[in-house]
Image (cartoon, rainbow, N blue to C red; front, side, top):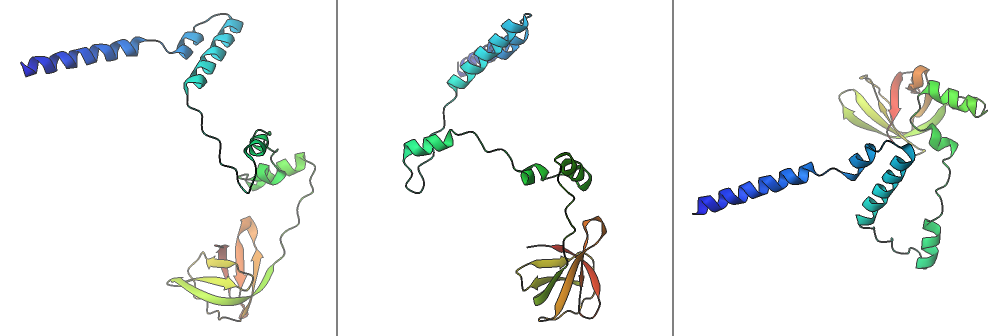
Length: 181
């Protein structure tokens, strides 16, 4: 008796799943409309209906003593236009140069070398060190090399070709580095 009940339940579930799967989606229905104006109106109705059924998120709590009305007024303002720096994020050097040229910006001067004093040398791996500078920056070697730099020693970091940076110690040892912090 129990096996018949289970089989009946499985059969009903599979038939109802098939029936649900055969119901066309509103977007699919709209895609079949031939008239462009009617199709657009259908898509607008389907999108509005979909958004009406989705729950809305609660408004964030007021911060810093701002009233809920003031917070709502500021949150409904249109987003600020992205700055030139935001537009440049992720571009390689060639694309960045084209973007700056299109905006009429002059080519930026190369960065000046950093001359700083070592605060400490942090051993990372065999023949790989990190160098903490007195300006708070931390630079790490990108190539294995025995660099015998000591705290209180003055170092210079210069940009090389292809955005590489090189640290030069007071002894004249030069090693390729990248900035960690």
